[in-house]
Length: 372
Image (cartoon, rainbow, N blue to C red; front, side, top):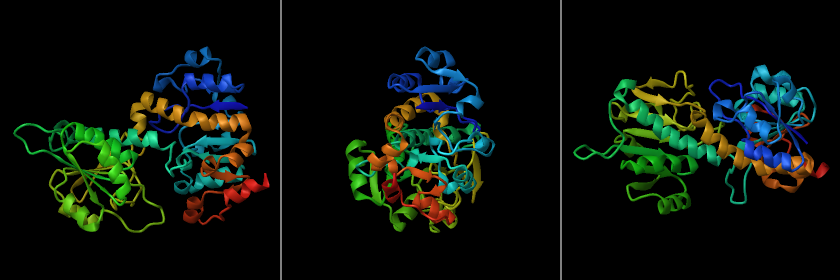
């Protein structure tokens, strides 16, 4: 199979889908890999690194002639015309429910779309989302540190245990991979950390891994309200279904928060778990609502493009190899966990959430593969 790795064109996206050592694995398995010029440069991987393992360095037009487009971010409007062949495979973070225009374009072009964020494993986890979730959680806490600084307009609070000063209180919503990443950093600096979650099993697992300065509470309405009153920073790590109309923290709740308190919404679901959340960018990362500073940058892992690219590349490689080695039909037929990530097939929508949100007819991928 011919695999194309394009340079990401989304603003402030510096990651690359595959690092040279993993490209070498694809080539070693008998596949041709084309890498767009400078695709990995901002992540610390250069054309000569890819050429050294046998990749072809090509221009943007040629890279999109590949059978499989292996990238990081969703397809942007100026990239739609890059997809010229029916049956071309797109393997990336698609987020089809949140991008209906993209979904329509890819279906019209009969692109086979497989979304990293929806691939599952035997435990029901999201193995291709997990490494970026950890990076986002850690980066989210670091953003709080940065924007608490006086020079950046914050209240000048150091998010650390300091002798003679009241210890800051960091409230984290969700103890999945993102919340664990945030809690690891926040607790390591000696902060008082409270994690709210609805799953006792998830909290028990996290409890066994994190230090004693982390407490765990059921994410009841009472506990949410109690903790936002004392929080210096709230870090939301809970993805919110697009069809939900309720929230974990409502606009009126912000009036209960301390002066100088901050919300970091790592999930970045507009009007999601945090009603006042709206996605921001690295150019304009913060805004105030009800006197509370909000940080809601959607691609925190790109701030650490080198580390993030390694993690993403390593996580996706086995699936990319399976698609390339078996062909996409057989890979989807054999691997139900990969099949969970199928968003589009032959002009049909196959991801249930995308269909529910956007009103598309749902085509069950489990039934679809029986026709292969």
